[in-house]
Image 1 (cartoon, rainbow, N blue to C red):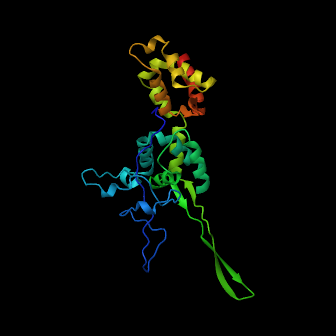
Image 2: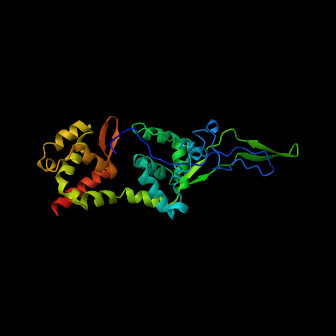
Image 3: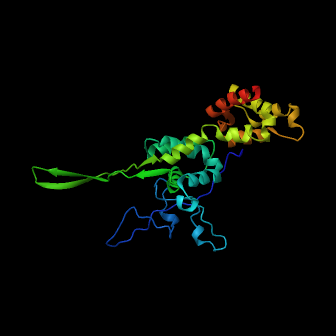
Length: 277
């Protein structure tokens, strides 16, 4: 969890190869063919994940798409997507929150680039949106590409074609509910307060208090935890506590150091109350 450069796994639809027939559909998607030359990172119907997977031998073929049909429901599909892509979890949850009332693709792309600045990913912003859509977490709303006008003087009707289209993505109720669950501290309570990790409560408190003061590098955290007797037997390094806190969304890497999140600050207060009880 502590490595800064990583990505999850997944496979998405790609823009269908255009067919010149009577039933031409410009938004049709054909999963049976993927042509690397046709891919466009900013096109919501394109993909960059595992573009040659279908050409692999059947013995190694694996379709990692998360969908309600495969996982048994929207919540289950989103949960699987997030769990199997832990390094993308903060970004995926942020996208869901950003799209609560609908958000243009251009805005999402800009924000995702910011969020992934310190945690690089091979996934383009629109690929992440497509992954969430396939899992049932987002709905794509395509704006009209032309407006119809009438000229009273000339007695004709004509279409005004828009040169640019900025699709809107909107979060589903299931996605918003799952995001709220993640941001409520459920993971922290289950992992830190509800398991044997509670024996290290004083260590977690010290680490979180240190990060509440100022962002710190791992070496600083290691120096802090190494001074505590409880971490000596069995041996527990500072990396362990950072990994657990990152898994619970209480810390995040940014600007070359570990930062305590807003959720982390709330959980620090809850940890102190649990210790006093």
